[in-house]
Image 1 (cartoon, rainbow, N blue to C red):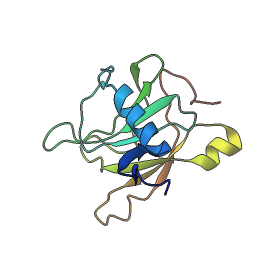
Image 2: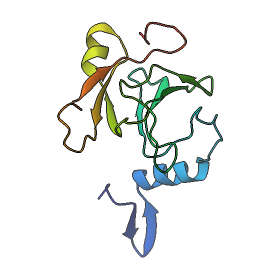
Image 3: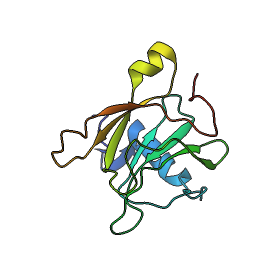
Length: 143
């Protein structure tokens, strides 16, 4: 069975293709230190951009009680973080959010956009929204 990591044959263990690939990944895997976030946080949402060039971090807690509406974009090639437009909530009451790429916007008009889903605790005013982040005065990431 090719789905197993190792197969037994005539009292010897042979490696399946998946096992060889897995072992190669382990042998060559390593961690690299990257630039730190501009605003350290926890319980935030992280989503890769549709063009696979950036990683976005949305909201989160900055200490035990305070949240942030900050959005930051990590440029993978430059190893640098940039501040983007904030989420449309105040820093004092920004809900925690979950984000996903808005593939429909990317495929139809080539704009990087995200769907944002706040954890509202039942507040009907906190509905999902579309969000096109901008940074450094540009008008949004386009392909």
